[in-house]
Length: 167
Image 1 (spheres, rainbow, N blue to C red):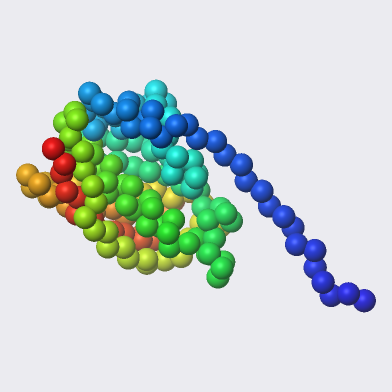
Image 2 (cartoon, rainbow, N blue to C red):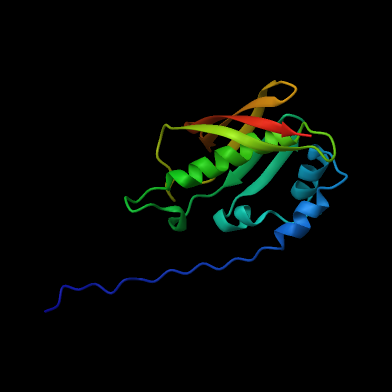
């Protein structure tokens, strides 16, 4: 009698649009206008959002909210959502919160990201929200903070990021 178990193969397919076209669509729009076009569906999501299965729920000046439903394809080898998924959501929320405050044709880049993992995430967690907010805006550097919470409001992770304004 064999004790070998035949693994169940799981598959996932997704699509994305040309990221260069999306970047070009940002020209002439304020950061807030650009992000609002993503929320409304006027513009397609960036490829990273399709890759991890996240979306932008809402945006206003200085604040953005992303959503994600954790799934097995987010898992690390120890059976929970990989820290890179946490970091990607938190980095996106911090950066987009900063972007939402910028005038047309002004960009930014992250200088740093400090992530804290507080609770594990799994496919049993259910949908999570990642909210990013601008904490302090200088002329050249903006500090943002983001947090990931589950449906009950429990804090799963948080981050801070400094972004350099490129004008």
